[in-house]
Amino acid sequence: MRKSPGPLLRPAMAAALLLAALCAPVRAEAAPPSPPSAEAVAPSPPAAEARRLPFTERYRATRHGGIVRAANTSISCRATGPRAAAACPAVRAGGKGTNGDFDMFYVDVDSDPHTYNSSRAEVRLPEGSRVTYARLYWGGNLRVGEQKPPKDNGRVLVAEPGGQYKALLADTVVGHRAAHGADAFQASADVTRLVRDSGSGLYTVAQVNVAMGRSTAGAWGGWTLVVAYENPGLPLRHLAVLDGFDALNSRTPQEIRLGGLRLARNGTGRAGLVAYDGDRGRTGDSFTVSTGPGSNTVLAGPGGPRDDVLNSTISEAGAPAPERVPSYAHTLGYDSDVFELGNALRRGGDHLAFRLVSQRDAAWAGVLFVVVDARQQARSGPSRARP
Image 1: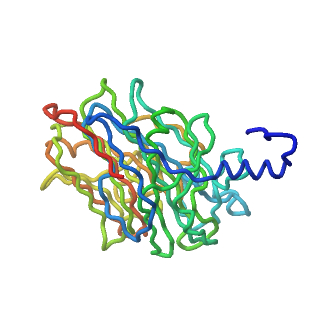
Image 2: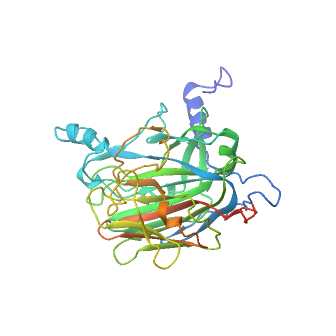
Image 3: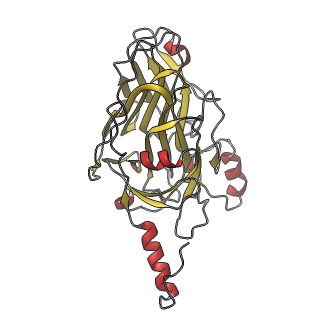
């Protein structure tokens, strides 16, 4: 904390100035100019809102490297009262329950009295990696026991490992829609320079605009930091980050197609999915991928059922899970999961088609990222990043 500039500045005024400096919004800086073979990020447009955002590419590259992500929830059950005192800790540890069963309250792990929610998660980059693109996504439900003001949807605080909070504004259209008894949103901003300069470690995100309390729709929300990187010691891969925002139900599955690929036969690959308000134990939601006719593969996370893919988890397939603070096994309505594509890639192909269906959950889809082995004939080409 900075000291007062002089003895004539009263303590109350000093505190006010410090809070104003901490919370003054600044837009995420675009990456500096780069050669044609590196990422390109256009200047940020002003943030607006839309009820539906179709999934489109945010970033794409073919290079030796990969994608990692850090994620955590911003709200959880409150362990108060005779019943919740026992039930809430059991649910956080992985037990059954939904956000509509509890009085929900903010997760707040920092020591800053000016934040009402905060959580941490680790970005874990392989040794020798260089960050090529990074984007922070955050979202939640504004209508529970209280109604949060939508004007704060497009702003959060973010701190790099060992750093201080910086105010961050959304640099693209914010998805914001009232449906299924909730008032849901997702926002995002480019944080490439911050993550490139800071590297691996625990990142903290605070002031995600989620409402607390209890309702049938339930309180939910969280954040995910997606980081693409290059590393000459890794295989040649197709890397892609796509995002959008819309409600899911039995009549409106989310279908996302990624074309123009040169997939290696029997290659390896992973896909990451961010979704909101998936309830554990409410079956009927599935996540599938196809590379062509007759190649449909149902995806499931570690220990997760194939018919309850939106089950309130932050999971990591095929790798040790990065650190999180807190590290709840059951997030009560926030999914940020990484799936192994496995047999889906055995025949190779030139595209990937993903399909997310929610038959019973009233859920929202927000982010998809993909890392798949490329045929070696493909050259490492320029990256593309959508502003």
